[in-house]
Amino acid sequence: MPAQLPIREAATILGLSLDQARKQVQRGTLPAEKVGSRWYIRLTDEQLPKASETVSDVSETVSSPVPDREVAALRELIDTLQGELSFFRGELSARTEELRRKDHIILALSERVPQLASSSGVQNGSPSSPPPSPVPWWKRFLGLS
Image 1 (tube, rainbow, N blue to C red):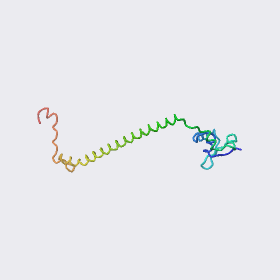
Image 2 (image 1 turned 45 degrees about the vertical axis):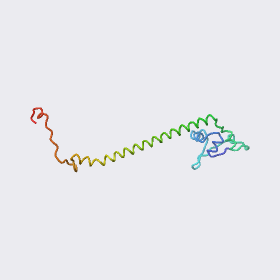
Image 3 (image 1 turned 90 degrees about the vertical axis):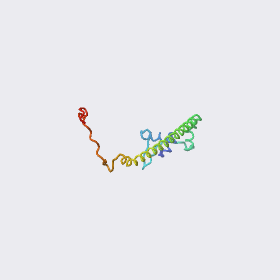
Image 4 (image 1 turned 60 degrees about the vertical axis):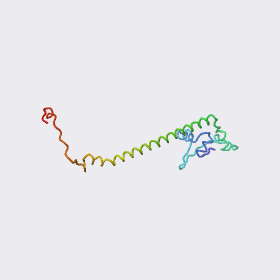
């Protein structure tokens, strides 16, 4: 008699990862039914473990220990990524400090704008004396200026 099991348990019995089981359900290669918000997979008698086996026994036979090479490679990858992370944190703090300095310079310059305007003879947006009018080029050429 077929049984309906939650997707996680069925994946363990079938020797699949949870993602693989979900993909097979999406493709329709693994019969499943959604009840409420949960998915249940229908397993046949052949797919179910024998009465003497338990789910933990099946998962032990399916999962194999990770070889030492892979563990060493993963540790090396972790070390590399941690080094890159610390480098990027340093870069971030340097850029943040650079932005603070630029903001400080901009603030100091914006405070000096009124001082610069008053020293050039411009007060309240109008000059103190009118600027000299430019001499036309033909007067300069003919020496009439």
